[in-house]
Length: 238
Image 1 (tube, rainbow, N blue to C red):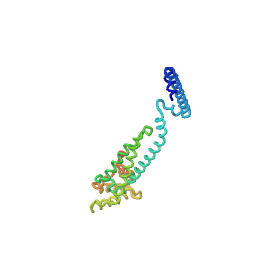
Image 2: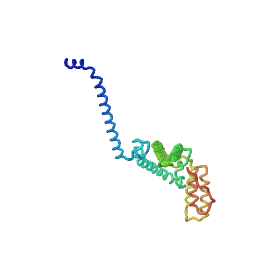
Image 3: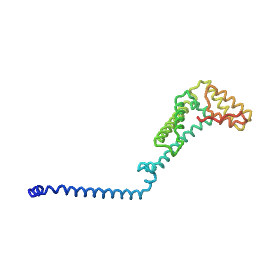
Image 4: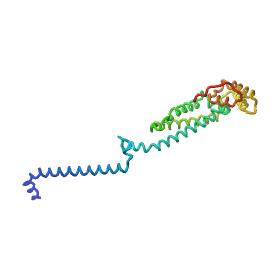
């Protein structure tokens, strides 16, 4: 130990030239490390050319591109859910007899009906028009809206089937039953043109003030009634 201290004391001046040597060695080692790193990057890029496919973007952009197929699958799945609920609603909207049997499905005085119709409008509004441009946030909002729409429809339908015409007075239920019979005659191809037209008009009078048939329902009913009842505009989207 004393010998080391003696050597350091006698040759302390070697620290200055040796420090330069160490600095040069450290610089060379750093440059060599950097070169090795660059070679690794170049090899990685050669193996993964997609990195250079999007100028100015790195792995995050590549990951986003890789997620596109999954996002498109999710969108198609949500759209199918949306279409399925629309299809269930159409079985009411295009069938006047069914709406008469379950009148609360179009009764805007019923909170559950209002909730269902509002949920439908929101889901329709959030349906992406540009499939390629739909972001993850757009997809999440659309999924939430369709789920709400599905649940709201199921709740409204369950309640409509439970109460049927229970909320109407005996006289109103009689009118509904009469209208239901008249609609059956109106769409009966075995009836004469005059009978069908008369039944249709009487059914509308019986329903007046009880339930409001959507434009699409009226258009579908009139389309099946023999004879021209006058041209009507196309039903507006609900």
